[in-house]
Length: 525
Image (cartoon, rainbow, N blue to C red):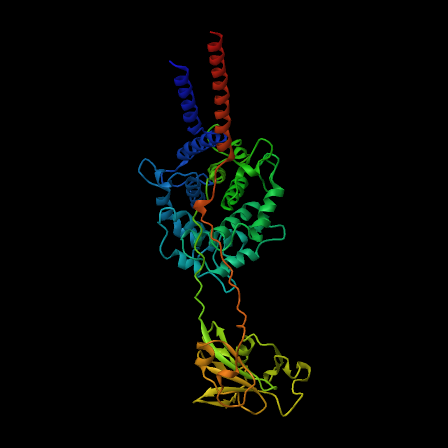
């Protein structure tokens, strides 16, 4: 074999080796944790299709969370079946009524939200459930009911509000802005939300997930950043988290929920490393021999909540923001004759069906001096630095700014105050100093041609020689909204990038040494 051919083969091998994907140690560890946890869950599934709670029997709350966890790790909850082919969804369909209603058939809003979140995964949620949940929303946006059963009730907490918002987000329909705003208002000074018993990290994570899933709050918003700051300051040296009451080295439930919140915010968990650990490795370190994950209290509940932290993307695509009605684009013409005899004209835009005469004048961009009397309404003292000041509004009586309407091809003095008279789109309104009517002009001349200033004029037709172009009235800037598609959030672990590079470099170095030895041998020969 010629040396040139040999060199070509070596270079080709280097290229092919460099293009191969290499699983990282972290990814392999997570896969092993997930595989063992799945085997554990399968062994714990009950004959009715549900998963057991602390009582040891199937429980709707634990089963709903199991569905979320199984989905979070990229598996299908419907594949978890009993010997009789019963799935977790089948179990929930037979127990949902007792879970979301009290004995008087009054809805628990938080429980209803959890069922929506779980059953949305296979589209089996009752079609009327979103509407029933919406019926509990109060005028301030809170979800409240009078449901009571044993230790459960329908009062509002940060936990129930977050679960209700997340439940509605799971349907893919827009969520009322009041509901989202109310959840934001429940944030405490330290960035947390309460679960009915005080500040709680798990509830805080759930609130972050719910707000982001609503489509109305972005990761960069202060309410989210404040919560993330709380997560950062309370993270343990082992990269996990725990509530203040917990004495274990970490709490897998809390670590799972917070990790999912961080993922939903579009952050990379590798950036939350502490020493040689990160949140996912912290969760894996708490796995038992049977595949369960937990500390002092290890069970199905702790395992499924821990698995939430091994998710690769948010639970749901973010809900669409509520569609706001397109603003109405209306116009009315305004004519103002000033004390010096000049007349200013404006075509005024407004986005309501009608507008008061005073509001029309305010939106014209003209400089005003005015006062307001509770009994009489607003009075115009001066316009464009002419007339009177607001501290002496009627300084030149009997002259003052009078209000006029163009009706039946003529000006008529307004019989109603400008603060109550409603201007319709296409109207021609006027103001004039003294008892003389404004200049005669048409709506079309003001709004369908150029916006213009007329100087100086005498009451009557206006000639073209009296026209000077004016600057248009100021307009409001419109801000742009950025929508983040959770499917585009990059969840790649930097280790997945750097490990193949390290392996590739090692191979290159090895082959280079081998190549140098071959060259040296050829020269010696």
